[in-house]
Amino acid sequence: MQEIPVITVDGPSGSGKGTISRQIAHQLQWHFLDSGALYRLVALGAIQNGIGLDDAKALAKYARELDVQFVSHDPAEEPVILLDDQDVTGDIRTETCGNAASKVAALPAVREALLQRQRDFRQLPGLVADGRDMGTTVFPNAELKIFLTASAQERAKRRHKQLKEKGIDVNLAALVKDITERDERDGSRASSPLKPADDAVTLDTSVMGIDEVMDKVNALIANVVPATS
Image (cartoon, rainbow, N blue to C red; front, side, top):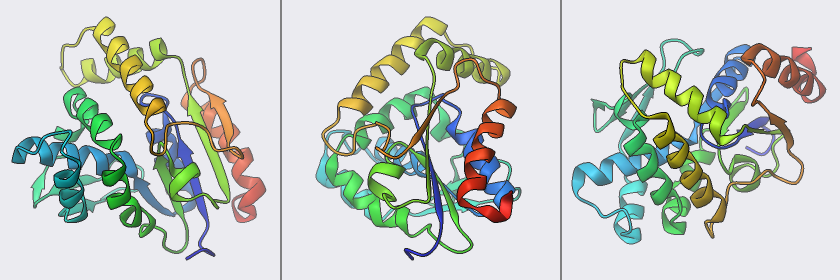
């Protein structure tokens, strides 16, 4: 397993890590791990099953037994996510679920319960892992570690645009507040706080488009995965 290459892309919500990670995986034809989806699934399952978001023992048990499937029809697109055989792809992307996931992810017992499940995604020919602690905790020996960031205001604008396009009316100021609170919670948690790995390359995407970010990322990839150059 240690010989299978891994590229990690970490960063806060709205930094572009999901889009960039999927493009890298599609380009390399590698496997893709959306670790944030796992925490969102635990949060959603907890809400649906009446489990308190501070009940570490029950949440960890649920996380270990999580019945989830990722069904991908197009590597460049987000996969369909099934929880207990039900399509919850849209449900886990709501702001409510995202905030709940941030609370669940702060619990060490839940993080430990999901650790091996995340590492099991490491399969040939390689893995692109998207998350918040992929380069620091889950895959500390990854070949390339990228940390994407952007201002809270810019990330809120991106999220606002996404939700508007889906016909969801949301207040921009409320999004900025939610994102700022989530950043503080993710960065201050005792277990695997959100931060760049010591050997990560940090890219601020506040004023960068996807193509510009990918140009920089591809230059980094070419140095560690020569076949792509």
